[in-house]
Length: 160
Image (cartoon, rainbow, N blue to C red; front, side):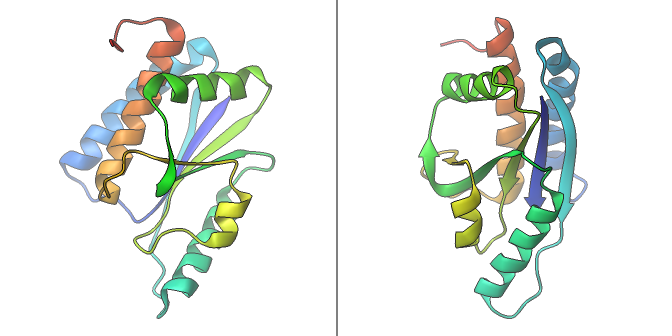
């Protein structure tokens, strides 16, 4: 199953980008053995529209354009459902075992997500009840993807 990441905003060169890349590289190397592959990382510039509603609509349109046909769409936002790492791994494993070809995990812009996009999403998750900067969200989801692979493969990286 191919997993893609989509993010509004671009990471600049620096420690955040390096750490996110390190976890995505680990995921890309370990995932194929259990049927998970990193398909792509899509970054789009934040909309320059004057109203937040228009910015959200424009950013949602960019996501829809990048979304593979039939893909499972998982949105990350503070109003989403909180799950633990094992449940996230299980979610990915169930999608893979259910024959899904693509999963897209999306990080919205600073204004949040378009309501129509939320309706379209298969799942909306949060990474805790605090608000996180987009740069850290990339690191967190990259690490959780790698952690999911280790959980699904029985690797000792994840300890409880």
